[in-house]
Amino acid sequence: MNTRTMKRNITNLFFVLCVLCVAEHIECYRILAAIVTPSYSHQIPFRRLWLELHKRGHEVVFITTDPIPNINSPNFTQIDIGHAYKAVGTLNFVQMRFNGKQWLQLMQENFMIRTYFMEYIFNNTEFKKMYAPDSDTKFDIFLTEYSCRLAAVGIAHRFNVPIIGLSSLGLASWDEHVLGGVVLPSHESTWEMGANAGPNLPFLKRLWNFVSLWRYLHFLYTEYVPINQQLAEKYLGPLPPLIDIMKNKTSMVFINQAIAITPARPRFANAISFTSSHIQKKLPPLPKDLQEFVDGAENGFIYFSLGSNAKSSDLPVEIRRVFCDVFAMLPYRIVWKYEKDLPGKPDNVYTAKWLPQQTLLAHPNVKLFMYQGGLQSSEEAIHFGVPVLGFAIFADQDYQVGRMEALGVGKSLEITTVTKEELESSIIELITNKEYKERMINTRNIIEDTPYDIVKNLAWWTEYVIRTKGAPHLRSSIAFQPWYQRYNLDVIVFLTIVIFLIASSTLYLIAKLFVQLHRQITQPQKLKTN
Ligand SMILES: *[C@@H]1O[C@H](CO)[C@@H](O)[C@H](O)[C@H]1NC(C)=O
Ligand SMILES: *[C@@H]1O[C@H](CO)[C@@H](O)[C@H](O)[C@H]1NC(C)=O
Ligand SMILES: *[C@@H]1O[C@H](CO)[C@@H](O)[C@H](O)[C@H]1NC(C)=O
Image (tube, rainbow, N blue to C red; front, side):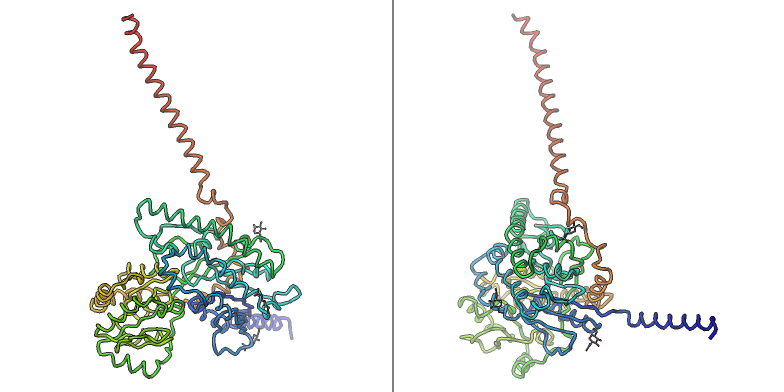
């Protein structure tokens, strides 16, 4: 072989290797993911992402309260912490609504519950083996739920990996503040303020919002953070401040929030919004009797569900009566997710403990979706083009039903005070006025007009963060600025003092001058009269 052919062969070999690299360009990464909140609606927005990452050849270890069924792959390990449901099993959200508590107040009173969730991860036998000091388990990235679940970031420190924060609804203001975003107490994008936030609020209302949101954030910094630090250190040993880990290691946040539903707001460069990823392409069939019930609904049917966390059967008897009496008068059939036997159930009502929601919303006879305002349910209503009547129960639901109303695709009523008259007239209006459905379909067209598959996009960014060693160039240095520098408060205070001093000394001089002039005018006269 002469040198020329050898050179050519080497070039060819190099070429083949390059093609192989491009075709097989993805390396296999080891991905650790955790969603600790025992709530179906926190889990489902991300399910397709885990499956997509696995499909791309990565190894996934997923800690979850709701394992994805029917997965048998050596490269997809699910760590089941479903017993965390015990921590919320006793919460009665419907009753809390009737007790009239504000959401921030409830969060403050029940914040220890969120901390307990974290304990289920750390204390898991299987996961303990992975993070034990002598373990040689390695990961390339950690994806974990934010919305104030701080202790988990200790895990990223243990494995020395970048973090992608996940939020199954709009990012909480506290996470926003830690990561260098803007806190907007009165802007209509701040879901935590429920019905209090909105456009063009009067001064006193904005003052109230400002004080209550910042007081809550202060509470989290002073009470919630130390408890999380203690918890993480109990299992992982001494750690740097968790807040610093969160700031230094958060490479990106994936936020389940459609900008077409939520008013646009400033976002950091490493935040990615997505929506409706949980909508099923293949819908599960309905049970036979239910299929017949909805097929036979000549005037159409209404689907009514308060979601997976709140139970219709917890409603007080007089409110249940209101619903039953109105349903009995309507020409429509009603499918109601009701968890117990319903005494005095009208003939046109079908109840069941659990219902295949998306299949019902996709049915051609469905006229209206009465619901609690859950974000995923809102996304489903939009996807299937069904107008909504919202009865908010807790968390972001007040906010979501308000948004549906603002978009003109639904109405909302207060479940604690609802009357027969308003319930009946709202239902009739939503079903007979076709504009609600038209606007719903228009909203869907806007949301679904995207240049790429949203889940593949999230998977791409996940790989990108690993490839770029944490994408430090996308992080904002604002996160590291002290609070007074962040909003230029020191400058504003300084300038206010300077302006005050200049104004007051000018006034003083002018006053002095006047007194002097006055004296000069009056004194000669005095001299004369003397
Ligand atoms: C699991 O991942 C390894 C590489 O980490 C790969 O060789 C193997 O084919 C994968 N197995 C499956 C079933 O995907
Ligand atoms: C941790 O798990 C062990 C058993 O695996 C159990 O005995 C212990 O009570 C758990 N601790 C906490 C705080 O949950
Ligand atoms: C975070 O980053 C800052 C600045 O780069 C550094 O001074 C600090 O030690 C880091 N802290 C942790 C806990 O990584």
